[in-house]
Image 1 (cartoon, rainbow, N blue to C red):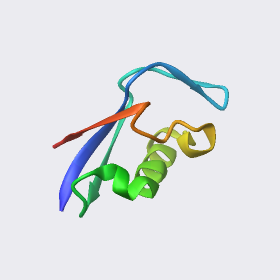
Image 2: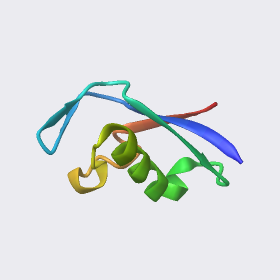
Image 3: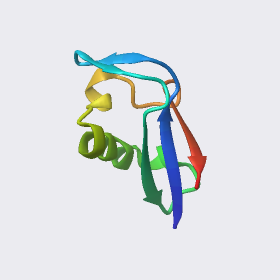
Length: 69
């Protein structure tokens, strides 16, 4: 199982909350690309930072970058 760090690429406003570039979460997945399991990324940002990137439209590779840990 691979572990990935998902980071924001740029500053953004998520439902009235300011998000700075570089805010990150970690997820583990069986996939080689963590965006194949985008729901885990969504849940991690909700759990760790209280941010709903999915409803704000920021839950994609245009706004987020990943690296293997």
